[in-house]
Image (tube, rainbow, N blue to C red; front, side, top):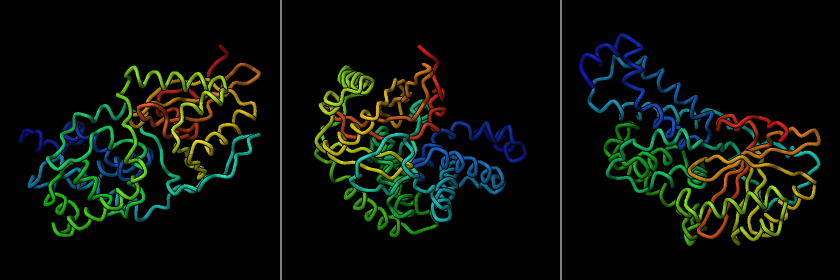
Length: 334
């Protein structure tokens, strides 16, 4: 960062954009972890950059530009968490399908997927010495969901310390707090996150991305889902498999419960074609409903969470997210 560019950035938006562009993608991922919503993260990012532009004349370079931007982004996200009403839960809206009674109703109905194509632009961002999580783990749907139930300040501290690796003193400065307060919040956040993730502690790790093992599980899932082969699908599911479908709050836990839900979909005569993509570091598919006219209409996006031998979670999102993944709303006749 040259002095000339800094001076230009204080008076010109083009130079400011040149300074901040290298941090845009990682800041968006940070806002996504904080808010759990792709759309809300984009809004928070734009608010962050606007606030940084307006306040850049007062940037005294006591911290790095990156740290200063993270301070602004974190506080904008905290304000959003405190003031915004989350998108409400949505009623069941799948035509001609009567789902079984859900195992429970989910809390995080505002959850949205994050396209891998965008996350890949942030993987080179430096992590500090305090980071405890692998990059892919820290963007997974399970991790992002668990973060959303933490109190806002604990959430911010855990992300800044354990995910990004900022030091306690840096985090205290970002939050206008004390080091002791940051350490206390981190301790409580870790305990809350551990309680939330306890059920998955003994799970086999997922296969490596795009490895033969992952490809084999994914291929079996596609075959079973597209042919509505319930037995083949159930054979892929772990005993504690979990299905959710934000913004609808319906959740099903356990192989029998998930099998019952899938049976209600297949039993209604709905048949699909799946188009592969990736979300949150996980295999994902745009689902397209076959119709008598031959045109296939996008109905949603399925994201799979894998273990070494099977599928331990399936998350279904509405069709509105398809465009984020470069997927069309409909496909022509084959």
